[in-house]
Image (cartoon, rainbow, N blue to C red; front, side, top):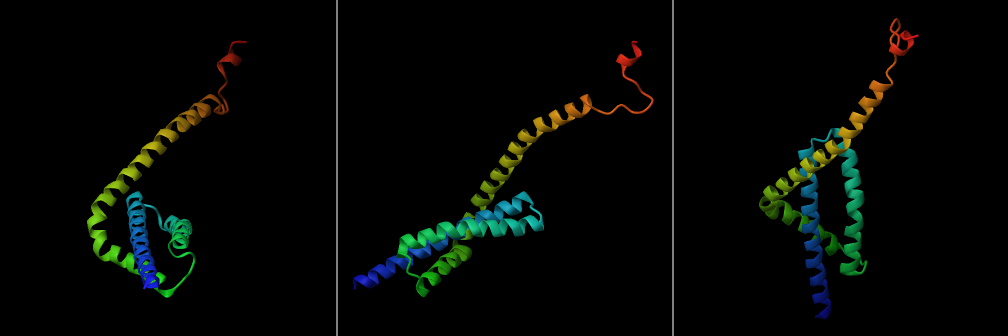
Length: 144
C-alpha cells in the first residue's frame, strides 16, 4: 500500500509540473505574439525556449521520482499540460496577456532609453567628422 501512495504522489506532482509547464508555455506564446516577432526569430526563440525549459523540468522530475522514468510519469506530465490547455488557460489568458503586454512595453521602453543616447552620440560623431564635399573648404583654410 505504501508503494501505491508513493506512485500516486509522484503522479499528482508530475501532473502539477505539467500544469506549470503549460502556464510557462502560454506566457511565452503571449509574449511572442505581443512582441510581433518575425517567423525566423520565432523558430529560434522556440528552440531556445524548449532548450532552457527542459532543464528545470528534468530537475523537477529528478526530485519528484528520483530519476525513475515510468510511463505514468510521461502520461501525467502530458495530462497536466492538457488540463491546463483545456480548462485553466481560459482563466489565466487575460492576466497572462496583460502581463505579457507589460513586459513587451517595458522592454521596448528600456531599449528606447538605451538606444537613444547611442543614436545621439553617433549623430554627433558623424556631424563632427563628416567629410567635406569637393569645392568647399573649411573656414580655417580661408583665414590664411
